[in-house]
Length: 100
Image (cartoon, rainbow, N blue to C red; front, side, top):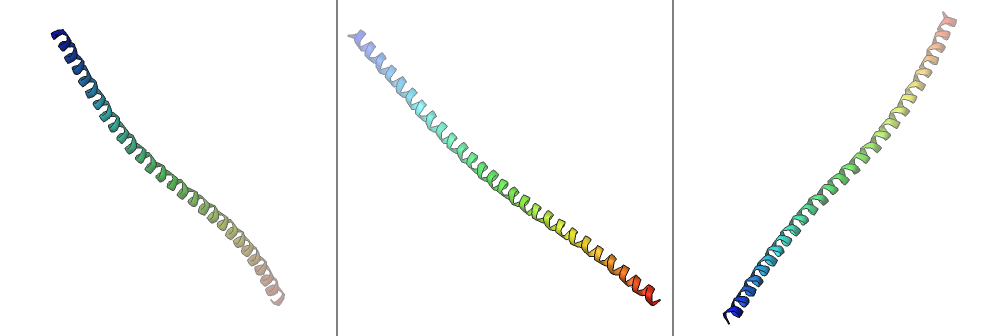
């Protein structure tokens, strides 16, 4: 009987060890899942930040193009006005030459 008792006790010890290992594995799994959740939250936050930054960059690019277009139009208007001024100066000079 002592041999049977010894085997039973050994089996019980083995079951306890397996249960402890399972508990350790469960705790490890829980810890890993919590870490993965925190990492996922950080990745989501980073993704949101990058998406917002890219959207902001797109807005700035659109504004930059609009300003560039406005500057081009304004430059054309200034050139036109300079041309008109030269024409007026020539006319005034001609009138002055006729009167003078």
